[in-house]
Image (cartoon, rainbow, N blue to C red; front, side, top):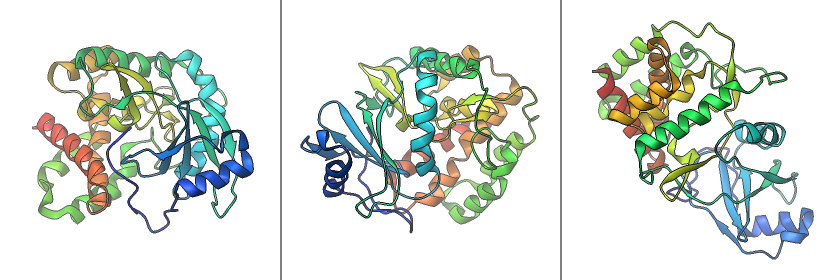
Length: 301
């Protein structure tokens, strides 16, 4: 599903391995304990993923916070969302509890075939239509009963990220074009805020969270950022995946007005945070974020 192994990226990371998975399965889901287990290489920062036999996957949060909440969030909402969306979603088949020295809830999912969207899409214009269709369908889902969005979560105002963006820019120094980044960021901050009813947002539609089969988008994974809020955050693929004609096709399919487009560009520009945080520990994330930042700056010029 992605590019690199499980390097230690945070001081509070939990180490996992095949032996731990085997112990957890033995104690909680013995029907699967004898299946082959292999780590899935990934540049994700919140979870470790293991393939379990041919049909299943195990996902374990690797640190407290967002990833831990994601296990229960996906168990609650994905069965409700999946029938209303045009791309496949992860199907959780079992939730495990803390045991054997592992401190968090964890989950077993159906295995979704495919590769991530880094350079695997056959037709970017078709992908723009397909992904816009997914986002449009997600926005139409009834938000009744949705959890309240906490500060700094996806779908909120860009201003919540201002301090972190500026801190990251300062930390990166001359490794980026600081003046261009701050000019683009100021333009996005100046865009009018979302003033219509909040809608469902995925919040993290990056290449690593989109699966491609036979050259076409097939599934969307990693719903840890699922919230209700400003849908501009789901415009990030315009700069992470699309370019030129396909970027404009994506915008047209979603009917994004100028203010939404600027806010979406601001969400994509927050790639500077990923570059800063993972410069020494996660080259996959740094490469993805550097690409997005370059596209944002070229679009801002």
